[in-house]
Length: 160
Picture (cartoon, rainbow, N blue to C red):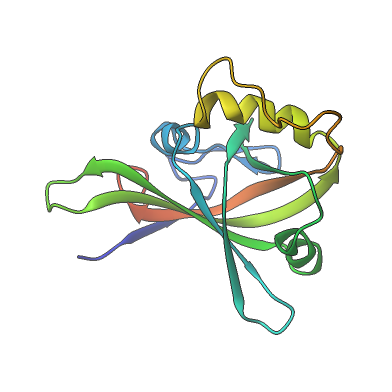
């Protein structure tokens, strides 16, 4: 089965331009705001892919990821901002395949705000009433903000 990919451009009804950010289609937003864990791929200094799992959320039309500590993915994004994220959904399409969302974009790192974002995301990933991070006085950490360049995968966000 082929996978589909769309370039978001000003003429695309599923991705309207808003200033410098693309509006993410509602069907893709649902996946990004769900409890699906994200595979986050960045590029190591030697050009090799580096993949990690992360909680993701949305702030406007940017995908956000929190990190309490300066991790490898952050160093990679600071050197080369290209990021790919994939999330599998529980939905099975008419061909018997799980739908999945792939987002290609550019990341930028901001300092601070990680504990607050992790607390917000913990309500989605761990449940209401959860306190996270559990450590007292967590470090301010880092928030990765990803602007979307392209959306693909298998699902209504990518079908033509």
